[in-house]
Image 1: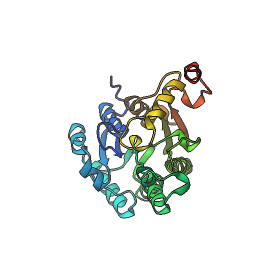
Image 2: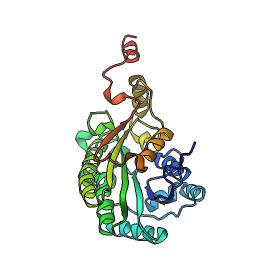
Image 3: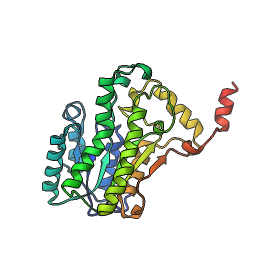
Image 4: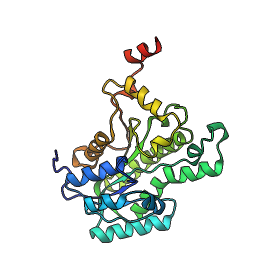
Length: 270
């Protein structure tokens, strides 16, 4: 059901790759709620993914951008302003990658060249985007920026590796820009710690199915799926959450505040 929460609003969705992507679901929900959007991903991701299918469904242009390149980001934001003939009201940052994870390199043995590459893509990219957005006065007053995180930014999870470091920095960047952009133009910036979700990126973490099963047993409401995350993101883009900023918001069925559940106790007792 649509509520016209984003009627008349415009935004950029980073990171949609295929129908498994949370960003893909957010794009669909945003348009259903009345928004107009621009889609962006890395050039290699556009070749690998199915983004043109989503673009056609959402009547949205696709503008490629390597988020480690200031020039690419500047080009993307300029073309976005030209497309909308003005600014945007929301941005979704759904970008994450770790070469160390992909190559199954244990955390104590991380290759630092890989670490820096993953950090640049997964965390520093948010800073680059918002820095350039400020320069161009891209985000309209009372706009909203949401970046997707994970609870591994605060707690240890086997196999999540340097992505945990990346998410911790991502959340810090969101807090800092939440203050700076809030003071400058009442723009709010938040992160969402989503339940483990079967996306292309998430599935690359060794033992990820175990994460999902454990979280399901530890969450009184069960795991939140990608569609439910999209619903939540839309509320943060809407005017209903104008006073929410600098927060890391757990969207995980209660997992983050549950010590132990009977289901886990019963499992351990077998």
